[in-house]
Length: 352
Image 1 (cartoon, rainbow, N blue to C red):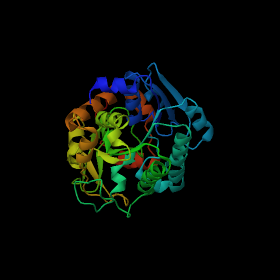
Image 2: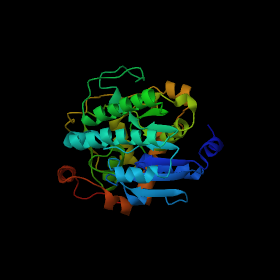
Image 3: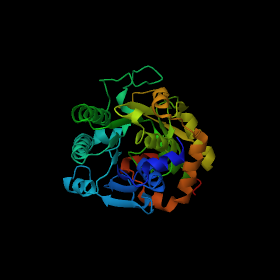
Image 4: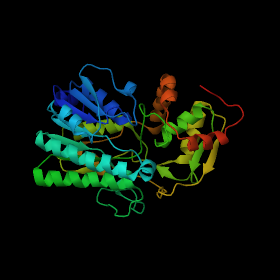
């Protein structure tokens, strides 16, 4: 789909993006605004930063929680035609540490948004699901949408599946046009590092501080890292194409990358001489390999990832350089994580 098609589809549309201050949400909101949409961002800034919200005409930022009905009434008063529900209590380890909050945000929050979407006559509800959650640890590779597991390893995985099930109910019972794209290991500009964040921003952050990169496991584990720009492209397609309605499909790169290779690439790109260190695998981390099939997304919406991993990693590192002071001020690591990393730090290492 061309940019002109996006512009014609989203121009003058009112679009609600929950979690719009996060990495995917901020990039999506920017693309929507540039296409002529009126964008409402709802984000409680629990895992994102206000400075990450694009400063563009046509973007309204509302600081609020998806569980707060006062804030939901506020944003639905604007009569959004399309809802991108990206807000979530992220991610696996966070949900293990705080399972009740995970259920409240990812379960009750999603349910309330669906209820308001029906009451408000929303024309399309796009729910950000998780391919890392739905398929469990024993699914055959590449992961296809026809497989799902009842044996999940974290509350986050359970509640992301719960969100899909609620979407199915609202689609079948109320006729709400829902779409369920499943994300795989998203990375790119906009994601601030932290204790509960993804491996790529954390690796870049530690490397730029001259610290060894901790690998939990053997390093032979693989993930299907997907550049945020490609996910945004898939979401924009999901928001306008009728072929997507009622469907779930993977948004991924369709490529495996070993974690140890990622660590070496980050160290080389940042000039980090501290190397790597190995740590114990986390109990919930039961997947040794991840590789998604993107055939269904190709067929339904013409999705085709356009960014190589090397290109995406380079753009992400550049974003870190450009925003280093803000990132270091915002990075959230618990004392145990920080101490564990510092313990292996060399006596002197490169800094940005």
